[in-house]
Length: 498
Image (cartoon, rainbow, N blue to C red):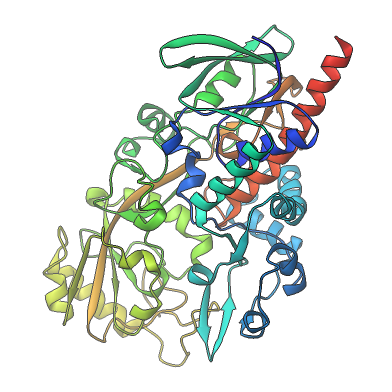
């Protein structure tokens, strides 16, 4: 088989960005996707398409979203999100454990990378439905997240695949990479299994972008701990850790938070793995507007500790830790119109009632008496001297309650009442491979492994404990672009030297 310049393992956002960047350098590129075509795109296809990016204001955003109308600009306060704010958010939510060199690359390259994606055919739009509330006739964005891909995750994959096919990038489906071709010095391709056949795919360089190990029940239990085999998987069933395993087998250094992951509130009766027909609709992310209770009828987190962007990825773990591995989110009519669209899908586990007493009797698995006492104590503790404002951390808090609710603490008092049953949905794992700022995979001695690059969710040292919303797709695109560029340059240099 003739040698391809660059082989990319995976076909999600990071992988396709790597493939397109390699083509920018005139490299021949082959993409190997374990999934069939109908399930292509990895976890990226299951996202809402939000991408965290540093920007100075609407003038910058117009470079990414030139179709913004004058009315949209007039009726929207997009604010700004500086590189310093992005870096600080990464440091804060990861408790200062993220590799500062990788974070610097991520932050400083976020806007140029999204602009490159736009120039390559990806269409962006304001994230109105998820990241802005309309107050006094004007939308106001919050949490530093104003941009999403048109069509969400599926739209992102469709647009990237279209760009790849237009540029003669070969995407080979139902092809599982099982081993790196390694001569003891450099990587020269991959061994694959496709429709019952095993064969080698020689390459000048390899980019691994095949996701974490969240779909591997045994690895989840081994690394995340007891009980994680019971978690739902938000995305693809194919993220089994293959890329990580293959790299470790040739001496790559592991890195990052191997016992940590991105995990969220996810509908209790969702399927074991993600459903592309529903996408991320099983998530339930409006909990800052209400309260969350466990089987004992007790609250167990500060629902208003921060904007949803900065708590949702760690609260899935907290739900998994509760009795029965579930919780109920409870809201009253004061906030019902503010609930995200995912609360209105057909496939939802919900209860509604005209009184709290009636609602408490309809919440499966919950101690009714204790729940009523919890709501009573919560309502008594809510401050009455601060106005509610969902666009800012309003300080509308409880007093003398443990756990507290630090913001958006409306009483649960106005009928009708509604509740939604959730469990833990794991998105991706935080442990992975060590890379340098150019996306070279690094060995246990701290040296780059020649010919091997990585990007996306299998990269370690970026996320610990928690995650700023929208950073995953941006990280995949930034490091995917760097990996593809580096792989193409390495392959071409190797060819000239041969």
